[in-house]
Image (tube, rainbow, N blue to C red):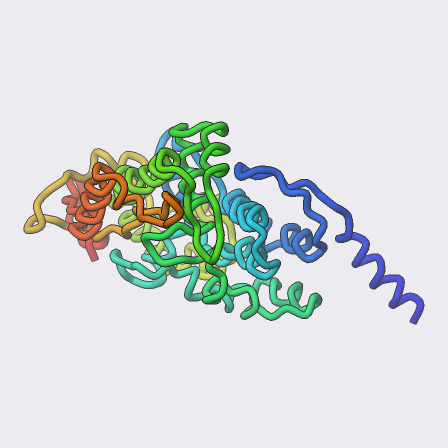
Length: 360
């Protein structure tokens, strides 16, 4: 009995010390043993090797990268900064744990569609937390997976429908801006100082910072997340991964529980001539597609609308930024139109058999 008690105390003490968590949203002085254990878990540590942008990080030259791990810690730091419940903070910390290798490429690979609006990792989130051992860690603290689900309707700081802000969108827009050097850390600090979360709503206290933040979301929707280069690269990368899965070059478990580098290494070193040809295209994607009209397109892909229309406090009332700024309203409408119309591309310089594989 004494040995059992001693072992239990050693487990508790190993996670009871405070630690400093550094994120682009600021430092967190963390003393919650559950949070520390989750961060140190294999499932969370895996996210250090899952890039936020997927295949672009490995097949686009000089591409700036950051990990799902860094993003997840940033979301957690935001939620803690604004004093939401512990369970919502944990939901934010874990919200991306279920991402596959190459992040959102899993939407296409496992949901078999180029126009997926629902993210694959959201659909498998509870299953994944169980398989990855997170459920067992939570159970030690009398918490169920359902208690920290990102889909919990009470977690309004973490999740809000578009066009509203939420902690996830706030973090990845600001983090992306830092990575691409569209903002610096001082800009981020000013935006966060003007950002409030009260009465289940995120809002800004001034128009200037609201616009600086919101225009990031419209710009990246068109120029990054939904640009033609990204659409073409994702289509070819998804084809390569699907083909590799069908030929048992990689496995579903590797995609779900492995890391980017291991899958990249297998794709890059295989002797399969089809994958070799697809990798060649991915490495020089801009020479293998052109913009075109819908009639001649090989791919017509609608874009997920990520443009945010934040709330702004003015004269004691909350207003949409689009109600206060006509130029932003026009920008938001143009972004919405771009997303709905979608990207139309035609592949060139590709063998017809390979093209047929990519197009279907």
